Length: 257
Length: 257
Image (cartoon, rainbow over all chains, first blue to last red; front, side, top):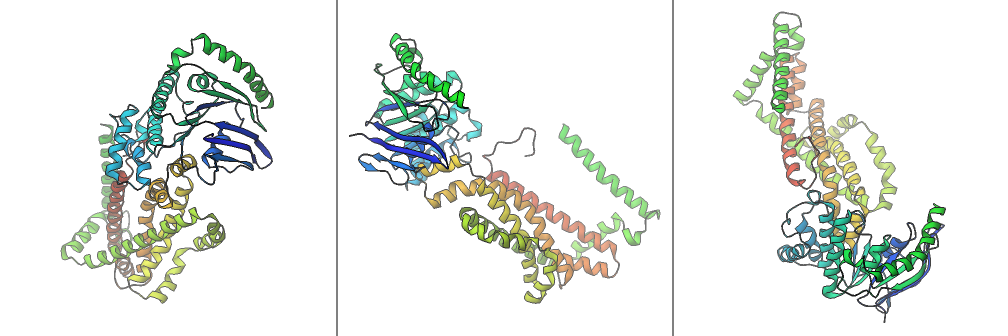
């Protein structure tokens, strides 16, 4: 049985139809990357999976049941900074536990462990504006993971980072994911990132009325190092194969824009 | 070093102005009857505090001001939060709030005196009508400015409505509320003093009105100076609390505080 399933999902904003008739299944513990040209409704699908957006047609099924309201098992890492600027790194990470009724003291102890896991053990009392972009992303990652979500939704989380920081974060993500293999839906417009991380890459067509048009298994061995794996012949072959399909959509998106 | 020089200039400007005033008044270039002179004003203030005759008036004005400040802010913040979180209510009440805010508050003073008598209550009421709108509009704006991403993130992390209020809406509105507090203090003083001026038996406004009644310009100026020092002291106090509570904010380079 699939863990998460889009069944004929369409989303319209007024008369603009962003995605149409999307069918997509994620097996438990599977890491799926969703790639596509800008404006193809990738983020829209994530918002639907998170329960932030109700589809105009179709539904999302979670473990065999249609999803109603906010997705209770999802953690969402946004593209923009989403941590609270008025709380320290430690309190930001502790917050999801406090929301679940744990006392602050206990929540902070556990939060410190998570801060150490993402390499920020030395900065618990820093406010977000005192941290770099990459460090803020780490806080965001710890904040999402501490609640132990079974589904991880990621919306180009590393797009704003420089290349080196980005590869560090990608490896970090893979390391953390390796520990308990959550189901991941990772949205990106960067094909290399998509292949390096995922078990499967799904290609979306250019918007409007966007839908999946290609589904490629990525049989690269794990554990992976995202920087090194890009140089293997297998990676290059996959990249060429998927790019052949994606390029046409990127062209269409540019022609339409 | 630069700070010191600015301070010296500020002090010099003040002393220069006072010296010119004193000199012009003594040599008859300006009429001491209408303009008094700094030494007389200083002596009067010293006498007021020496004999203690100013304390009851200061106490009354402080009481009125603090009550107006407290209740005006409380009502303003509460209603601001409510309307910002309930847009349909805001849509209904919007014209009434605008209409009420359009009334020049001074014209309310006589009616409040009729309703609440010559005592403290009528002045507090006048102050509240002034303070309320400042606090209300700032709180409303502050809540509306909450980043939607931060809000969605908090909701997905499991925040319930009370959590959102406490950890997201209020901290986000805090900087707006604080900037409004400093304006509010001024308004609370205006409410108290204007109320006293128009009809009362005690308070700094009453002292000034009495002095004016007998063409005692020294008394009028002395009353003004005491009021001024008083407001500045309160403003500094609020500034201090603000700095402590808003420690998370990035400080503007070279800016204040």
